[in-house]
Image (tube, rainbow, N blue to C red; front, top):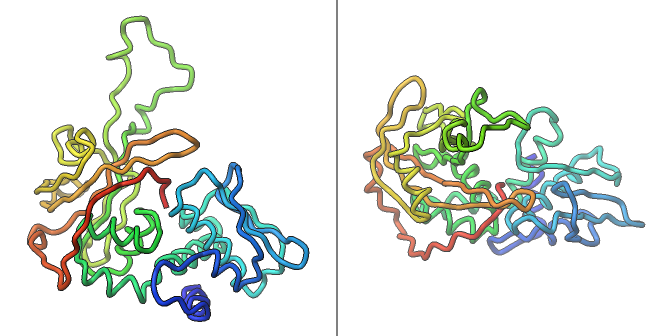
Length: 293
């Protein structure tokens, strides 16, 4: 799938990022990309002698771009023959369906071509500033960019995404009712927990999903300050406590019109915290509210 996606990018002959998904779609017989109200992420369907892609108009631009490229990836299969495909979600990289998994890989390549991302990221160096700037340059979401950077394995790092949540046993039951006046102590308090972790192979850590962090952690400080926080953190990853240099920023997103708080963090071995790239990145952080992936 990566090879097929790269061939399409080469055919489109972009001078550099961003790689506009509408243009890539046109090379695959797509007459129009429509932005529509819909429950799912996107769909591709025949329209006369051509194809049309419809994408959720409520999603962020980065998420829409990924979803469009996901639909384009469907057309790269030799077996595709202009039939409708509707995708409730994209960017999950789920192995429940081999085709959908491959289409996510194709979309990631079309949106964040590693042949361009690798040298730009190497020059920028590992930082949340680089993550934000590269996501903006490629017109991708922060999460999609983080996943591709971890996959490139340029540095021993992890990009970890945190949201408030409960352990399975502590989650409030539907319809659970508390006596008046006991609401503030009748339910367990939500903790900041791992929702996604993209770990570079060279780092070698396993960061379990739903792992929580203490209230005095840098991640919680970032959550409450609504800004950028950095420093040394001792992180419990289950089988050991590791000392890591942390950079994190607050990046909420919308899901089904509900604003969800989120902290995005970069973890590095402590001896990497003074790493200097060959081309320093200057930036102003303006984090927009966006859907994941």
